[in-house]
Structure formats: structure tokens, C-alpha cells
Length: 189
Image (cartoon, rainbow, N blue to C red; front, side):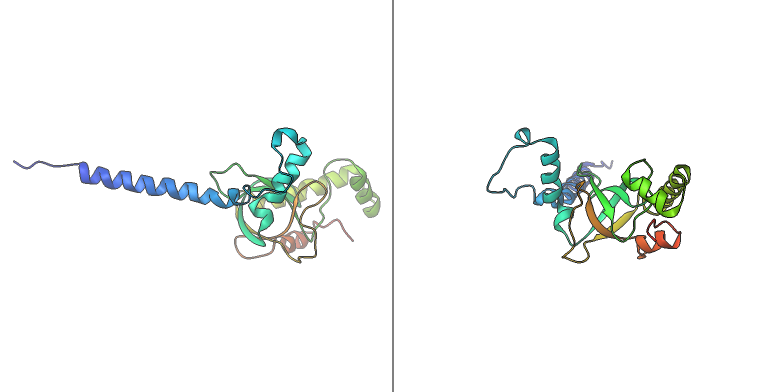
């Protein structure tokens, strides 16, 4: 009578699960690599204002420190702004403002009114243009692995809203800004 042992097979499964777990943890490491860098005036988050904490998070983020990095787009805000993460298992989302394009604004404000005046559009037309740009950006970016490029080192790294300023390369190797330009989504004349 033959007896079968399951132990070697179970050992292999456990080994592969352990390796997989290590790979998942390792994939998050770049996101935390710069968190340990302390400034001379190191402060805890509890003593910082919400805006200062956000600024420090963005400045020390792995995406901010890199000239080129691959990210996953998780949300599209409008035609030239989106939210991304560096790995699926990390909660390290960061807002990116795409360089080289300025799409129409979707909410009323100073910039919104300037665009309406400059193009001789009504508010409704500006909002429609903004909606179209956001929809096309969603089609190109949402749930896609894209590459962010810093561009010229003399350019600012962050805007006044602490959004990362980057050029974007789509998965097929084409430039996101060029794709949006071809669709007529730049509000500048």
C-alpha cells in the first residue's frame, strides 16, 4: 500500500507565499525611503499644521525625489491634474499637475473667468470644455501605469498647491501633453 505525503508540497506553498509577501513589502520601500531623512529642525506631524504636514510629505516623497518614476494613476481630477500611487499596497497617493498644458477649469474662479474672457466663451462653454478635457484625460490615464519625468531641473518641482509638476509618458510611449493638444484641450492661445 502506497502512502502519500503532503508535507513537501505544503512547504513549497509556504515558501512561495513568504517570497510573495517579501516582494509586496519590498515594492513599498521606495515610497518610504525618504521618510527617514530628518531635517535639522525635525518636527512631529502633531505639531505641524495640516498644510505644513502636506508640504513635508510631498517634498520628501519618493516621486518628488525622482527624475523619472513609474506610477499608477488612481484618479483624474481634470484635464491636467491627477492622483497617483507608486505601488498598489502603499497608501502614498500624490497629486500631479501635468507640465506643458493648461486645460479649461471646471469650477468658477479667477482662472476660470480669465479663460472665458480670453476665448469669448460663456461659463457654460468653459465648463463643457473642462468636462471634455477631464473625460479624455480619464480615458488616457485612469488605472494606467505611466511614467513621470521631471524635465528641466530649473523648473519648479511643486506648484503653490503642492502638486508635483511633471511631464507624463503614457504606457504606449506617447506623450500625454501631445495627446491632449491633438484633441484641442489646451486653453492657452
